[in-house]
Length: 278
Image (cartoon, rainbow, N blue to C red; front, side):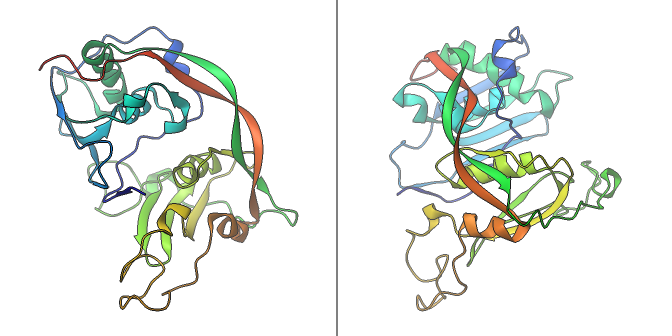
């Protein structure tokens, strides 16, 4: 099983593909360098996706992730050839006046121009995990955190969580998800990273909540060795009991149920294995 040495920065996504059928943006990077990254078969891969100071700096980012970010979707919503796993290192500079929020539009142009991407969207029935309210009702209290309490601005103190954003941290007990004033749909988008099917919000709860959730993902249970999740530093007894995601959400009076639901999918009709020259 592959493991990633870092968690990449992710853009907020939804289970829709609105941008795929809208007129294509002409906004593009002023200059972009694309070079081969790690092999898709590499066992340990460091991934970075950062957008700041009018530049993007991507390390070992797959074509699938480029499409995911460009069209604001989740990985499981992208269907295409095997080489969507090909990884690249990308450095690109914004044109004058462009902002970080416009990175997806510029990535769309880059994928079309350099990889000759052609795609369409369609709705497909998909196996999902539905987040629903448990039989005894929810145990969630609406957040009292106001938008002004955690402004997403350059003046925000480092490490201070942004209202509506989830911090993902590793610990001996597994993954720790924490954030102020989170919608349950945003929580589901994040939980989808740790299970083999999409997680969709079917609770009907529309408030924002302060989330603090710790669980052991299945894909971390295979990792052995002293100090690995679920073990003490001497490789002996577990540091803390392993709590699955399905057990952890029950603390909120919620549960995850397997269901079928229609999801919008991006179907890649054509994409080159390698980009045109820099």
